[in-house]
Each structure stands twice: as C-alpha cells, then as structure tokens.
Amino acid sequence: MASPVLAAVHPGTVDLAPVRFAARVAAHAGAPLMIASVFASDEVVERLAGGQFGEELPRVASRALVRAAEAVRGGTLASIDTVALGASSAPRGLAFAALETGAAMVVVGSPAGGSSGRTAVGSTAARLLDGAPSAVAVVPAGEQDGGDWTTVGAGFVASVEGRAATKAAHVLAGRAGARLRLLAAVQSRAWMDGAGDEVTADLRARAEEAAGAGLASLLGTAVDVDVQAGEPADVLLAASADDLDLLVCGARGYGPERAALLGGVTRQVTAGAACPVIVLARGPGVTLESLVD
Image (cartoon, rainbow, N blue to C red; front, side):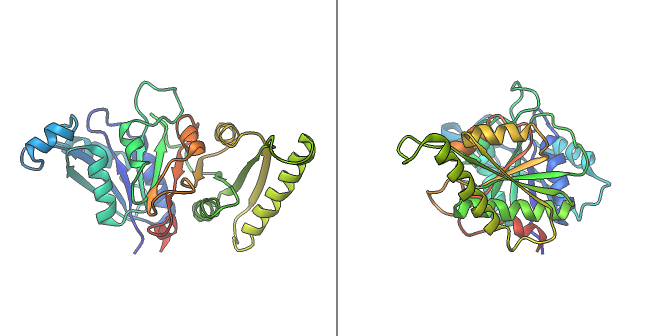
C-alpha cells in the first residue's frame, strides 16, 4: 500500500495551503491523505514536561481538521483521514505521527507575515527540517491550488542526495504528466586551476554529463537539463519564480541518516522560494517512491 502524505494544519490560523498541496501530491500519486493538527491538554501531556519544553497549543483541534478536510473533499483522493495529535509541541507530534504511519512526506505551511507568495521556515518547519523521518515540504503561505502541474524541478548535484532528488522529482512529474527540469549550478572557485571562463565551461560540461548519466534510467517523462553559472541557491530561487510548480531538493550531504537535514543551499531555498519546496530525508528509509508503491 502507498505511504500516506501527512498535511499539518495550524489550529489557530488554519492556513489551508499545506492541505491543498498535500492533496495534490496524494491525488497524483494515488496515496492516502492524512490531515493532522496538534493540541495539548492535561489528559495527553504531562504538565511539568509541557511547562518546561512545551509550547502554546490549543486544547482542541477538531474544528480545524473539519474545515481542512472539507476544503479538499470531493476530488480524486484515494482516502482522507484526520487525526488530532496530543503532544507538547507541534514538531514533536508531527514527527511522531510520520514515524508511526510511515508517511512519505510531511507538508507544513509558512508563517503568516512573511513575503507574499514565498516560502518561509517557521519554528515547526525548522525543527522538522532538522530531523523528520521523512521528506518535508514547505508551502508558501496562502498558496492556492493552481491545478495540474506542468513543470517539476529538481536541484541536481553530482552526489547521492542529488540523484535522490532527481529520482523523486521524476516520480512526481511522471504521475502528474509534467515536465522534469533538472537544475544545476556551477561556480568557479579561486582554488581551481585555469582562467575563470575556462573553468566555468569545464564545470558546465561535467555537470551536463553527470545529469545525463542520471537520466539513463528515467523513462516516460520529458526532461530539460538546465546548467547555469552562479551560486546554487540563487539559481534555484530564480527558477522557483520562473515556471516551477514545485521544487525537490536533497538533504544535506552529511549527518545522521533517515532524517531531513537542511544544508546551506536548502536553508536559503526554503526561506524564500516562490513555489512549494520538498526536502528529502537523508539515506535509506521511507522515500517519495513509496507514495506510488
């Protein structure tokens, strides 16, 4: 059975952007959608623990869940479940739920008050992106469902994490009938032998060759390879505002396995992208491919 997509709903703001995006992913993948909201009370949280390292949470989450489910009901979703999570903090509850359900992705929104149409990382997203056992998607606040995706982007680097991003983006693009756009950035460094333009040309050729090698097993999806000179975060941010419906990035290249981990590039991208951004968990474990198993 396909792994679920877990959408987080803030019971106070009830921003429906994460739910709409998660519903779109689940519909394309044929995966179940689970909508979750975190609450706290003396019945579910030990008082001293909550007072020492907990956070302000509502006592009930049912109304937020009902509203969120109604917003996406009636589509082509395989199933919709809602769950109220009793926990001392939102990231704690969501991470535990992802682990218990085997969710392939946790989808969170951006805090209110940020730049319109751009992603931003609030406290819940920041903590999930430093250790969730699954991929984490960050959605711009107030993002509307724009319909079927036409272009899915992947941040490509010649590494295990970069190839994982390519494979995951290919899965989603294939299910949506969208184009896959591999985005790579190269930048000459002072320590590299040769003139700047010469080094940049060599790096471009190497990146295109590496990207092409990674496409050999990806069939059935139109693919564009876009290698640009510049800092990686700048290239990805510009592409997010161009024609991408979503962007998939790999986790940081080092650190504990089976956790989403922000590196320098993904940290900048999730803080200001103009489309939803998916950051994969590092190493083996639940992958986006499990959405369509």
